[in-house]
Amino acid sequence: MQAATSPATALDHLVVMADSLAQGVAWCEATLGLTPAPGGAHALFGTHNRLLAIGSPAWPQAYLEIIAIDPAAAPGPVRRRWFDMDDAALQAAVRAHGPRLIHWVARVPDLAAATAAWAGLGLDAGERLAASRMTPRGLLQWQIAVRADGRRPLDGCAPTLIEWGAVHPADSLPASGVALQSLALRHPQAAALQGALAAIGAPGIPVDAAAAPAIQARLATPRGVVALDAGF
Image (cartoon, rainbow, N blue to C red; front, side, top):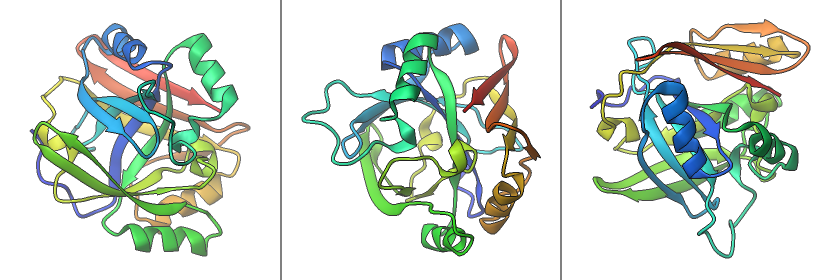
């Protein structure tokens, strides 16, 4: 069990998209050597997930979310799915090459203030939505900023912004022995990305200029250090 949610902006979780949740679980077992904990369903977006604790001293309460379109969701999501999950090219890449890191989410103490700070930079964080799902330990509630078109900010290198209620999902995740060591970002608009992170007070995340957007997360696991790479 992790400590109480920090009031400061922090990396909240990494997002790995899978073609199906079963494939995501198999990927996690093969790549990280562990079976992820149960998650839940997101009725608003027609998705479901599994979770794995990856907290470390540098990134307390961090977790890995394995997410897939929920085939049981009917008649479908109310709106475009988050994290570009309706993008045909992304779906095809995940279907062809397997689960992959696609994004990250930052926890902020005041979602309205954070989205306003980005709006002042000309960056659309998205509409602030209230969401929830039931867990064996009770109701999880949060607010999250999602664009109407479902697109990830700055090609997925800028985080989706989330503000949790009284309970954080990492509070009840079992210890996994996996720890997030680092997150690094590359983007053609490196200065804009750095400005977006600074505006919400996201510390300690290096940003480099590059021809194409990319994310790399390094995890210490029972099988040694594993690098998860996302190129867009």
